[in-house]
Length: 406
Image (cartoon, rainbow, N blue to C red; front, side, top):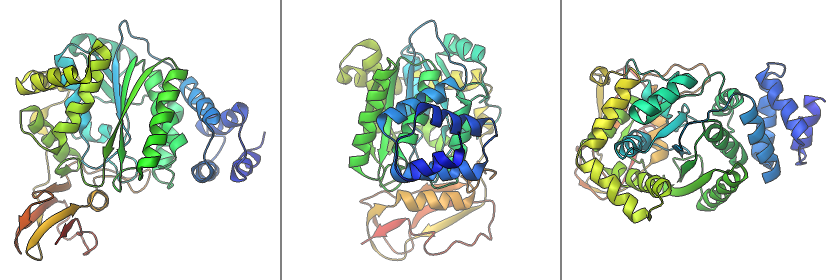
């Protein structure tokens, strides 16, 4: 086979065989195919798509690229397709654990402007993201939660493709999203999965139509691998929480776990309720009541502390930058919109995300929104705090255009 023939075949929108997909993707994993040729193939796939059959084959190839996990009991998993201010995992995992429901999750880093769970976990000093298979099994038994990064042995193909997609404008391809998500879930041994599909300007999926297509494909792919998959579609035109940036988001999640109600609370309860209902065979309404109860009585926060401690994290050492700029309102009026896209772009510029594969993340920077949609403000009111480690950073009017005030 020839990689150029495969690239051209997909450029002409022809269906690739299992053998062709395996040759191209495993060739990249084995470093026989360079970045620029795989980037070309990924772009051809992003433009022309893959059939469901091609996507199933690619998912299978991803899973087969490494080892798979098999737990002694059925475990849950949750995935978000990526949004701005999305720290739902930090809330739902302890909720499940407090109800003695195990959750094993292999998370990823940020894609495009969206934040990644692993980047956020790394903002907690000491937290071990590199769990071995044995540590996954051990942590599930000890604290009912095991969340780490992709290891070299677990879906290694997705790990290298994920990093390349992040910096080549190919993050929004539905077939590539399906293969990436489902390969990790299947390899990680989950029996019950809830996938939170973010939809809007601040998400990888921009339209409700695409979100519905993705939902159908994920559920269908789950059936092909005998896994129970449920999906939720969450709006992402505005940030999911008031904090954007790794350490800032973790701190807001902690506030929610301690009882503070924020925008993050409802979607977290919805995701948790869906998983609880699936696992226990209940109606979603009953799952919601159970989730809310352990959030309210503090058991979820206790489970959170135990989880972070079990994986070596020290919550007392989380730091945000002490260099804080303020964004003030230029006029009187009412906030009618807060742009998730603008917030995400600003956080990237501050250093909270990656612009290249080799970019280093600054976990202490980001944006904290102090006003919400619907609030009335006066000229000079502080709308947001901008955490930076470069007080001389050049921020344009476009960079700071987070709020629409009328």
